[in-house]
Amino acid sequence: MERRATRPARARRHAARTAACRARARPRRAPRPRRPLQPLTSRPGRGQIMSRNSTLLAIAATIALTGIAVAHGPSSPAGEAGHAGSVTRTVEVRMLEGDGRMLFEPAEITIKRGDTVRFVVKNAGALDHEMVIDTLEGNQRHKAAMERNPDMEHADPNAVKVEPARTGEIVWRFTNAGTFEYACLIPGHYQAGMHGRINVR
Image (cartoon, rainbow, N blue to C red; front, side):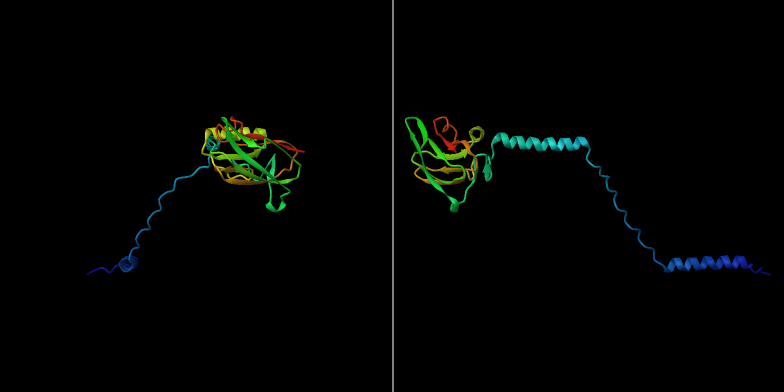
């Protein structure tokens, strides 16, 4: 005679069959792809910051030494850009060449502090010239930059470049008393005598 399975044995067989049926009925999910580990980023150390600052300073020094641009902005110790509607005086300045010399005529101008002056600048020579209004020291620095980079262009309210037989204009307000200068800073022109004095009383 066959022995009947005990209740615990039947229960275990039933549980096994149930589990097998569930496994066959439920499809397995594909495993999720793992995200690649990102490298940890660290904050820049003091050495990296100093190196970056040194690089920026080197770039600034290169720009200054090569004279890529010289900008005076709307104001300087010599005064500030003036408005055409506020002009109180007009001064005609001629650019001349002859006998190996270059010069401005007149060579000296006296102006009252607070005046807004329109300079009408006429080039009566055969070469390009410019007129730059600044302090004596400022013009010397600008002249040195021009010697390093003769092709420098200007976009400043205190300067104008004039071609032969042409006329240019500067409108400038003299806010400070003192002695200032107008000069042509194209290499060689200043040395040939092309500079004048402005006395502001």
